[in-house]
Image (cartoon, rainbow, N blue to C red; front, side):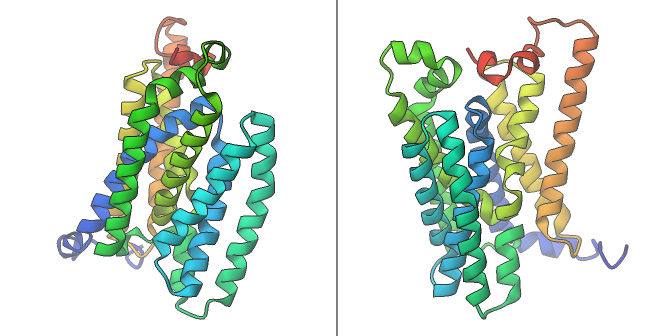
Length: 295
């Protein structure tokens, strides 16, 4: 166990990951807020599909010797644009994602196979490498985070309406197709951030699990996003703080914290149901789903 964990020089190590902690905090907020609509719009599968092309873009950038963050963003945007344009309806969206996922993963594996550099760089694209965030990469992460947060602020209200009650929103003339594409592109940017923290394989832990946990305990349209962002923040930052004292990559810590939070929230919701809170309490979100919870 001592070979896996050692906190003897923890104070010195903590001073070396200042950039990483900022990046993790930003990702927690972005991932938590975007995850709310991932749940409402039933787009968990889309998150995984976008992450595969984000991985392919990052692997291509690594092979070509250019900015890996840029490659990840471009790959994500390509996937997000295709999913948003071709998959407005859930059935069409899932078909598009099912086609894109193996294509993106295959390209990523090809590019990594051709890459002759350090094996750690290849491994980091799959499992995350945020403990080595440099100033340039932090600049990319901050810029992309700001774009996502501003975009979400602009479309939050109409997107909530469209996600919660699409039939009424369509009858009132809201641009459902445009909102779908806009959100999918913002989701793509958020995925590109998460890929650089926990890697392409475990991106769901920051863009799906925190929001799923929040919806287990509240139906409030204000509290649910706040809880989701808070849960993702704790998982991302907590993962770094725990990983500093060990030789294990950051991703297992992030995913474990996120999963434990979900289990606690699920346990609380089950307890409230047994205690007879009824459908007027927070557990209404559990029974009816997040779409009804935010009407």
